[in-house]
Amino acid sequence: MTLRVNVVSIFPEMFDALRFGMSGRALEQKALELLMTNPRDFAKNRYRTIDDRPYGGGPGMVMMAEPLSAAIDAASGESREGTKKAGPIVYLSPKGRRMEQTDVESFAALPELTLIAGRYEGIDERVIQTRIDDEVSIGDYVLAGGEFAAMVLIEAVARLLPGVLGNEESAVQESFTSGILDYPHYTRPECFENLRVPEVLLSGDHKKIANWRQNQALKVTKERRPDLLEIRSSIKPGDKH
Ligand code: 9D3
Image 1: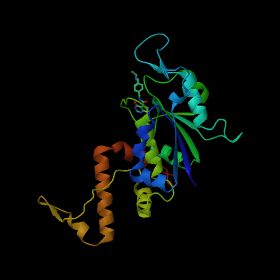
Image 2: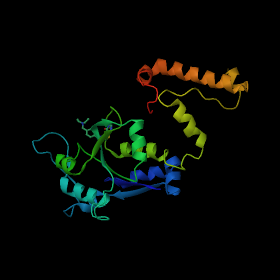
Image 3: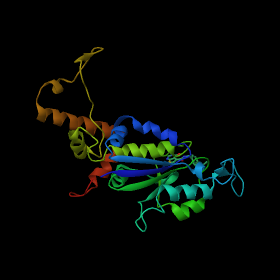
Image 4: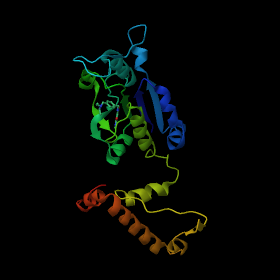
C-alpha cells in the first residue's frame, strides 16, 4: 500500500524539502515513494538545452516538447509493465482548475501519480495534448515554477495516507469539522502576557467545551469565509463531504 509519485522537474533537489515532517514520515514508512526524473537528462544537445524561444515571439522561454515528453514517458513508466496504465499525469499550471481538498483525497486514493512541474512561461502545448490528463493550479497567485505547487500537492496527499498521521484522532476530528475553519487552540501556561486561557477549556466539561469550540469555529468562518457556510448549507443530508 504505497502511493508512488513520479515527479518531472529540472530542479529535483527542491523536493528534498519533503524529507521533513509528515511527508518525511510517509517516505520512511514507505506509505509514499518519490521518483524524480530530470528533463535535462533527456536533452538532445551537448548544452543540455530544455528551453527555447516561443514561436510567434513574446517574452520568456518555453519548455521544449522533446526532452520533456521523453522525461514524462520515462517517469510515468510508459515502457513499464506492458498495458497497465501508470495513473494520471498531472501538470501543475496556473491555467489549471483550482485544487481543493476533494482533489487531494482523490489523489491520495491512487496507487500512482505523475506530476509535471514546469518552468519559464510554460510547456509546449503539444506535450499537454499528448501526455497530460489533468491540469491543476494551487491558487490565484503567480509562482516562478511548478515545483512548490507539486510539493504542496504531495504534502497535502501524504498526510492522508494510511498510517501516516500517527494521531488517529486528528483524522476523525477533521472529518467532523471539515468544510469550516478551526477553533482557537491554547496550551500551557494558563496566563501568557496577561492573557488567560478561556475558562471553559479548564472546566473539564467536555460537552460544554465541544459546544464552545463549534461556536468559535462558526464565528470565525462567518467573519472570514462566509462562502464556506453557504456551500455547506446547500448540501443535502447524506451528501459526502
Ligand atoms: C504572464 C502569464 N503568466 C501566467 C500567470 C505566465 C506564468 C507565470 C507563472 C507561467 C508560469 C508560471 C509558473 N507557475 C506555475 O508553474 C504554477 C502555478 C502558479 O504560478 N500559481 C498557482 N498554481 C500554480 S501550479 C504551477
